[in-house]
Length: 440
Image (cartoon, rainbow, N blue to C red; front, side):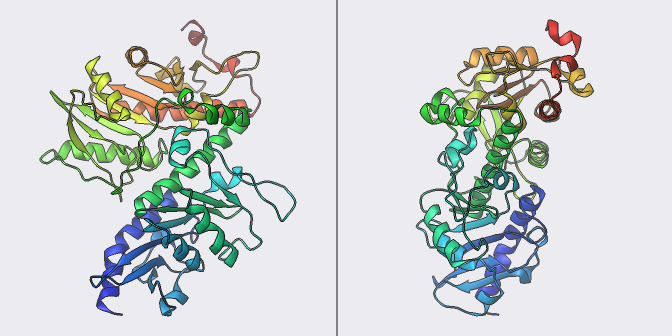
């Protein structure tokens, strides 16, 4: 092996291994499925495709399972590489694209099945959550092909779809995403599956998903708390705080727990800790241990350039004595926020825990509309410490540590899971609610 090829493999192997591990932990791969690929240039400017080998275990990669091949000719690496190398080569040839991922996004795959006669033209997938709507351009194309694994038909269709959309689905086979870097491609795969999971939960709850989709497409501003920010171009901004080892350690531990507990998809949500005149802040709160995320120090004072997410954190600190804030896009909370109890004419206004621990911690958790104003949100946070915003995620606050505030979105997820399960079974959950909650 040439020195340049060895250098590419050594340089990219830790990232490939980390990405593969994240896909496995997030149940978006089985032991051997999927592919990871990037475009790489050597010091002489020669361009290569670096891709995982056929049959490799993405969650436990070895160095010899990374293949480097020419973009212009067939070589030995091509025969060792994934059977879908032609597809990834087509994706990587798109303007501005340097990375691609194929993931077995189970939740999105399930909700994009249909039983139409073949050959067929499946309907696209339309997200009902803010992350999917904004990051996936409101739609994920879905295609049926006769041979859904490494076929010439796929090699033609998938790059065409990804030239217009960040993610696309081959029915029954999974999702392909593209990005400026591997972190972005992973981010989009996680967002796509997150959106599929929310639709799956909504269907279990009997929510009018098609009616909700029409409402969102006609006026997204009325359906979501605010438009979410684009994924950063560099994939992961570097941390700019030094000499604060303890706070960095707590941020990393909290971010890892958010990701591992599936409280928010990869690099979504946010975390902050208040200082005297500044605050420590991570704009990518869900951080796998292997990949991390940025942690910055920023003034608590407002700036006209503040993104909406950061501004909410600052408004909470300006109007309270809270010391910590966490925002997560908990999928179970998003789904339950669209639920309407039988006989009622409005969506749920509060979640009442029916499980023992949830009832001990919270008699109720308020659910508010996406157009809630910041004063109302902060008042509710004073009263309840955690709030579900329809189309805006779960916001929690703490008086002391990050561990304290992390308990809120974590508990809310379990509370909503139990509630969704009971509703799916056809139980009358009103009978399961604690008597005290009826007076709250």
